[in-house]
Length: 486
Image (tube, rainbow, N blue to C red; front, side, top):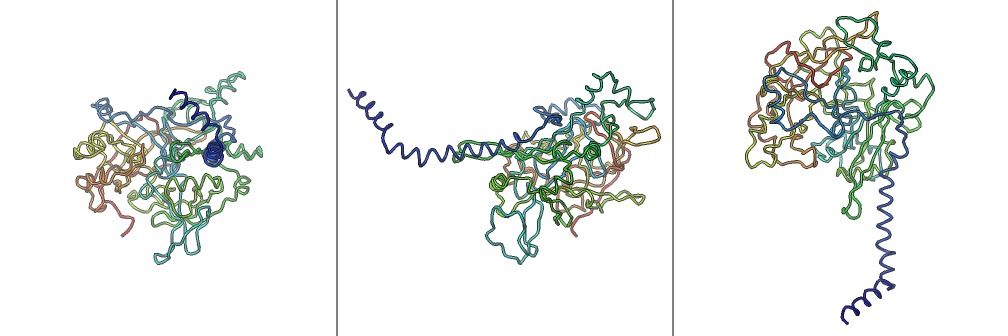
């Protein structure tokens, strides 16, 4: 009897006006909001045709296994590249690669973009309440780059590189009866490696940019795009969606004009550089969600590197630079960063037992471009010049590969950024920076900062790095860090 009464009461409640009003006022708006956010998260991708592009890098796997396993496998071996990373957006998640082109400013696509926020030009300027949809700095303000140092959740912004699928073109050539590899390789030369479908072969096929402009095409993603993904909460944080932003890697002048790109001043440390403001590529709603996700309270903008206004490298240069001008994009100071895996393991061993990260220090925290195995802990500290990978040159017979040399400029002075967990975006209050401060103040020039890893300058304009490439140490010696700020 009691059960029947309870069932009757439940049926009456389901059909009551009060419940209908509750659904209309509370539940339905929530469902609408969730649906709208899902649409926002997917629109950027669904509206783009990625046909003819392929995702670059290692997807779903990594060459960075556990430190113990890596060191055991590398024991007794020669120095080799264990892993390669490029970071298309400064301080955001990197793309792990099996091979990469290298330019004078570093690995291709590395730190080509950066987020920035509006800060007072003068310290005495008072902040006021800002419009969250504003994408221009206030009078008396300017754009300044941001990193995980201030906004650790940048670590959670995933980056995907989508590049023209040259394999599809090569397959089409072979289907038409052509032997692409034989056509491209030409006469063999001692200093050249086999080309064809290799990176050199791709380069020999000519510039996609030139072809696109010659054909008059204005497709913004035809020559590749960068996709950014970041989580956005919905249903009061009970569910998480992923918003996506698509950025052309090589926008045409027509696309830049249509999107309203502007050239503006951007401060990176002590440098003031002209860079391209591409914030209009972002949907205003997506930009607002991104600001909230990162915790940025001021106007937020996205900049891309203006290749005609790179920043000069003026410290720790080669002894005889032969009048060469070394430049960098949005990297802090130098084009390429190298780190030995044994040095990461040694740092892990030195962490206190109570440290949360003890026994699982992730090498990705240090955001190196090149991770090396086959050397002892901190052995890279004394490297002055190395040869690794290959340089791409050109003579009367076309492109060729030969040894590529790098000037090892200085040690990498460390801040607290490695305290950020790359998987969670949570910043530890102490480690590993506290331990580095006790054990790695090894360079008087960098004092009081600890050092881990090495900064390098390519001594060429175009080259290739591959995982597994051997590292030849050409010169060793002492380093003395030259500070950015005196």
